[in-house]
Image (tube, rainbow, N blue to C red; front, top):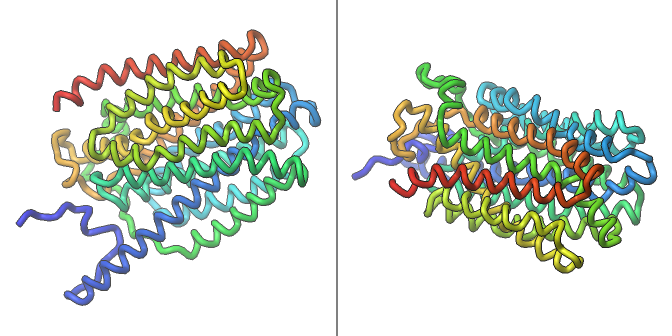
Amino acid sequence: MTSQPRHSKGPFPLQKGFPGLIIGAMMEEKHKSYAFFLVNLAVFLDTLLYGIIVPVIPHYATTLGISTIWLGFIFAAYSAGLLLAGVPSGMACDRFGYRPVMVGGALGLTLATIAFAFSRSAWILAASRFVQGVAAAATWSAGLALVAILYPPQVRGQKMGVAMASTGLGTILGPPVGGALYQWAGYASPFLLTAVLGLLLTLLLWCGSWPKNRPSRPRGRFSWAGLLAGPNILLATAITLAGSFGYGMLEPTLPLHLHESFDLDSARVGLFFGLFSVTYSLCQPLVGALADRLGRKPLIFAGLLAEAALLPWLALAKTPAAEASVMALLGFAVGTCSTPLLPLLADSAEKLLSGNPGIKEEAAPRDSPYGTAFGLTNTVYSLGLVLGPPVGTALLQQHGFTPVAFTHGAIMGAAALAVAAYMRETLAK
């Protein structure tokens, strides 16, 4: 009889004795499912708020008189908060547990959203956006770490694909809901709606049942140098940085391009971004399951290559229908690339922690520093979003939208070449 992997013990303590084992297993599965549901709800709400602001950009540029450069800084403020709080949030998750970190993130998101609803100056908007980024760092670091500890590597890609689909659902609903509420009920309405949902989430997180994770004490083997030395971790963080930098350039510039080139109002701009999010969200669970079976890197390479080919057509498309087609295909490409990155990061953290690169994933210890690893990912992701908007808006102001789209495509093409260098190792195994 083969021994079961350590993950089979589960993060929730079981009862002793045969009846206790049966009841405990049932309760464990119930707690695990509920915790997974709360993680999905938390990341959904965060991306819902993130998408709500997109169709309101023309309002800032016209009604409030905020310049294009200031729009870039407002977007970058969110990422600056995510940048500064990413690693500390992940380390706090590993040390203190999931409940305080996730509750703090949800509450901070709620309060910052209320402040954002009543902000009228560029400085206050940027400050509110910064606090939202800090809160999002807590939610993402703890949430992704929780998914990693709840599920073993054999199904981790699928489960993280579901979590990423929840983010896609938030970005699907965010732009159209934000644009529609803005036009029908005024500027503050979409943010107040999100604040109410944030308060509800805070209460659910506070009352939820959480696994009793232990602090990471891997016999002195874990270190920052060891974590950063892993080639897969460097690969995942580099691709994350490239993707977030390029998307950061598009966020404040693509809505203006759609408005100026095709005369689209806020609601229709939101629908374009919603179309991207639909295809992005639909492919996530399938890509995650395929990554569990076929490997992470081949799918990452395919997604990067498709992104590099599609991005220039955002500027070259001549009709709204053609632009919509590019947005839809781009959602599939981004989903194919991004979904396998998260389980790749978790798998690599486990292997590094074991001190033996050849150890089987099933035997990896459960006390891996998932929070720190995903906090690192949040940090590099936010770094790209900090740098991207100012660069994108500067390019738009000086040369138009075409250099923005082509620059993003070139970056993703370079990332695809980097993955191709690692593919030899993957295919050789």
